[in-house]
Amino acid sequence: MRVAYITHASSMRHEMGPGHPECAERVAAIGDRLLMRGVLDYLEAFDAPQATEAQILRAHTARHYAELRARAPVEGYEHVDPDTSMNPHTWTAALHAAGAAVLATDLVVRGGFKRAFCNVRPPGHHAEGAAAMGFCFFNNAAVGIRHALDELGLKRVALIDFDVHHGNGSEDIFAGDERVLMVSSFQSRLYPFSGEQARGPNMCNVALPPYSDGSFLRRAVIEEWSPALRRFAPELIFVSAGFDAHRDDDMSQLGWVDDDYAWVTERVIEIADECAQGRIVSTLEGGYNIAALARCVELHVRALADIH
Image (tube, rainbow, N blue to C red):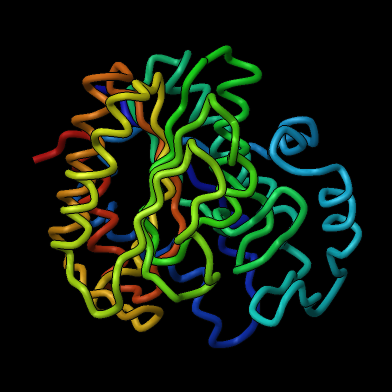
């Protein structure tokens, strides 16, 4: 089975200031772990291209694209919100992160690959159609999904988002789009303080109570996600893969453990094998405890590539 691993050096140059949790070490730790554990031997590596303006405008407004480009600093930082900043390399990194999703989609839909994992940053699922926020500038998954629908001719694509924070940007972009089913889990009453009331009939949002463990995720997957996904019968599954619900990650109050990430990935694969010819594109979102992030991404990628 051919599985693509997509990254780019620009992910290491974007940074938002000393001590910021969304840091370059996240991508480096994942790459190092996959290399040391022999996982990369089973994957085919690609450099992410830059997404074109036309590709980004399938998910974002022209005004958002133009304003973000104009705000890119020559030196220092440009603050987009209290937690989100651009440095001189952010614009390029954001283009490559979105481009990774486009390349992954091409490889999986038409390039002979079964699955792909994008180890890129900045992440994307908080970026709304007209706004950057929450460490995110362009919505990488949304750019890839709209490419699959509008350029490659797919009719139905599912987006699975298991980050501890609600993917408000993805919901903003896809709410009411009958070609997309979004299923998600997130901690209730946590940033961005949305998602508990779905914005469209194509949304299956499951808010999880603070201090709950992975059994609550498993129940949501079995009772809510899986029936919705099977009814929808996607031709391709995208995953916004966040690893910040881990009990070692202080960005939340959920108590997932490593095996929960392996389990949820295996359930995604089951649905993909039933409905989507096994086709999955996964792109990195959250996860800020570096050690837990690297371990859990390894389990995620091992499952995607069927490495035992």
